[in-house]
Amino acid sequence: MISVSFSELPSEFRVKLSDEGKEELWHRVDEFGGVKSLSEAFPYSQSKMYNWRNKDLALPVSFVRQVMGENNSENVEKLKGPGSSGEIRNPVIPFKISDELLTRVEASVKINAEGIPFYITSEKSLTQRFTELLLGLGDVDHKIYERESRYEVRYPKFLHQLLTGLKFDRDITALVDEKGEFRNGEIFIESQEINPDEVGELYSREKSFELALLRCDSDKIAELMAEESEKVKGLVQN
Image (tube, rainbow, N blue to C red; front, top):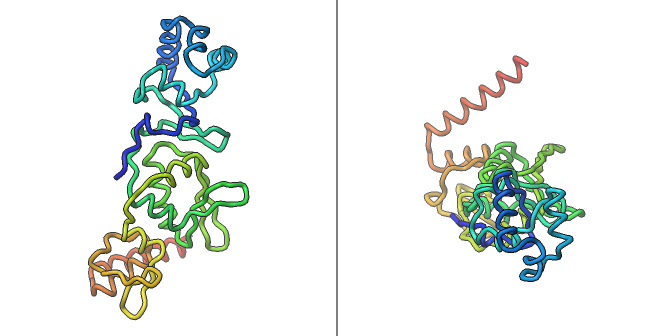
């Protein structure tokens, strides 16, 4: 699990503060000597700061850190990028970002012509798991599309920038979920053979079944078959 504190966020990211947080921030500015004095000490023009204050705009992370302290994030209600590509409401800072999420991003996220990141898979269960991991960071803006048995989860560019800038250890289970192949009773990721004992809980329904067969896990096989049977019943009844 990787922890990303407020002090480690890119300085060009922007935040919206709660009413209490805004009051405290501008109170500190006034204590410093006001906007004019602050503009002489930090690289922010008076006009820009007056604009932020009067129009209640999102503030650069760098500005908030300089006024409120490097890791004072308790009043952050929204986190945005430098542009307008979505936001995270009620971000859980410091972010706790799992190797699982980062592995799935590396394995299955593409970038479209507009520069928007999207996770792509053929299984709804993997879509649900990826979305669950995203929402562990806060109320992340995202959209889910289904096209010809393919699912896409689109999320903000700035969040992708953050995630792809982190070093992590690949999660073997997540990698099997995303890219694993079952051939002749063995598991492969590309040309690398994977020991079944290293694989934990899979979210891919198809691969969970394959793994259960490989392990001769009759209880898991029965559980998965019963779940599929319930799905079929539901479709027939509807």
